[in-house]
Length: 183
Image 1 (cartoon, rainbow, N blue to C red):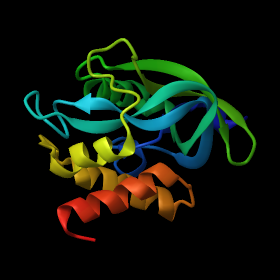
Image 2 (image 1 turned 30 degrees about the horizontal axis):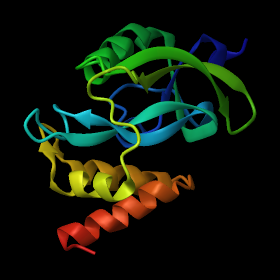
Image 3 (image 1 turned 30 degrees about the vertical axis):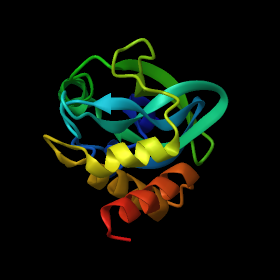
């Protein structure tokens, strides 16, 4: 019997990579086609406030692109508690939409994974901001879970540790350090 077939998979592309917050039985590098990782969502809770929004990463639908991240296999006995946790964490303002999408694991297997993508019609969606503006916002924003810059740096550092190249995040990480005087 294929034990991984009994698992619920969750695709992480941002903070879930370095802070999943749930029990998992397996973790694999994975790719989601048709979406790109982008700072395209204003954060008014975790990394900003309604008066001074920050930016968080989201999966923005864009044909012809792909996003490399991590797929987590959740054991059957943890599925319900994991979904409850993820929905409380990710759907705090309904700017993300929960979808089950096909991801390709690094070993070539394809699995269906719970994935949180941005709702481009939501008021918090801000796709198309240039990188300089993103850096400026991230350098000064702070929310309930701390500085927006910390979120960027944790994500960029963990992607690099995993060997996942993301030139925009690398550039933003350096630029925000310069703006904050920590470069």
